[in-house]
Every structure is written in structure tokens, then in C-alpha cells.
Image (cartoon, rainbow, N blue to C red; front, side, top):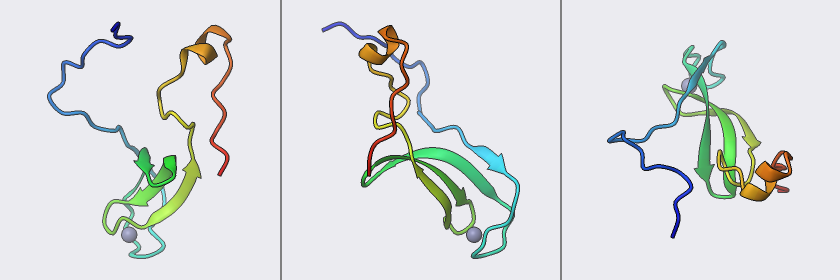
Length: 84
Ligand SMILES: [Zn+2]
């Protein structure tokens, strides 16, 4: 079987997170971060508090996460967000 992606050279994989301005509505900590998660129901783009893990925002992401199926690559189309 042919592999489309090379094997990672990193020992541990991690999701990159982006710091967001603002305070948590639950604990008032100013440690909000945005990142993509895979949970029950598929992929979501979330904004969560690093202190108490309260979800400030949770938006459905593309159904395959960062993976873009080849049919969308060759047709230069964007993968639509999942219908929930
Ligand atoms: Zn919090």
C-alpha cells in the first residue's frame, strides 16, 4: 500500500494552540486558547480555558480534520463542514 504522507520524525504529536485575548466566563483566568479537537460528533474548532477547560466556543470543523481528500485537491474545492 502506498503512503501519501511520510512518517513523522517527531517522537510525540501535538496540536498547535493559539492564545486568545479575553477571560474565561467561568473562572476569569485570562488563559484562553483555540485549537482543533476530535470528540464525539467529529472534529471541532474550540476555544477553551487552560485553567478549568470550560469551552467558550465550539464550532464544527471539516469532517476529516486537517486531512483533505484527494478528490477535493484535484478539483481545487474546499471540504465542506459536516452537517450536524
Ligand atoms: Zn476557566
